[in-house]
Picture 1: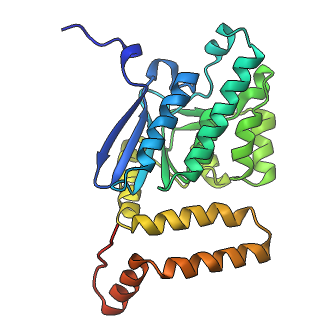
Picture 2: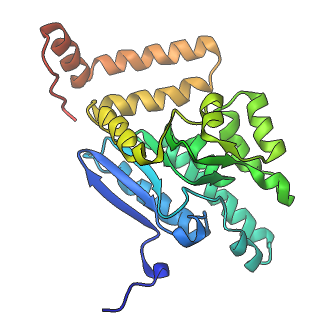
Length: 265
């Protein structure tokens, strides 16, 4: 039997189990670089997951030795650094990042190896991130004359201004302990324990009401963009609407009755 050429395999693999969908970037030879094709494939996979009511949580992972090394610089050069190509690439990448934010389900980044440039942007964009303790993070565009302006958008929404500026201006590789201290990731664990730690977190979230997770994720990002008084008014409206949902009423009743809840979805 002839072995499959890696270039012929799907760019993004999907595996579903117990209300968790794992999407794996599948271009190990290019360190899962966000080429035009990879961006389109991941966006399509996220769109499909968004419509799947059986999926409560998404895990985003990378095949091979790295999570994601950022944009495909070889593709950029092959395109002649053309302005039309660049605009289409960065517009599509921005839309991909926004799709992660607007996805109904929480997204957990499973990070190993390196997450650099747009790869670090992916980590910052995901709702949660668990990394191997030997993972490394950087926005090194400044080192090659191409400032990481689009990764900056996600970093400035995750980190303190000085931490974001440190990453953007120095381009230095940060270890997982530093990324944890800065707030870029939620947890750093020994590499051998990475899958267990990700599965534990994903399983915990998957046990919740999908409807409630969707409401909460959307409200989190919506209120963060509002002035304080408007944020409280909006959040109050969300809670009123949430309370009318069957899952909220079931969850409250289950808590009072000291029994496990039975979610509608």
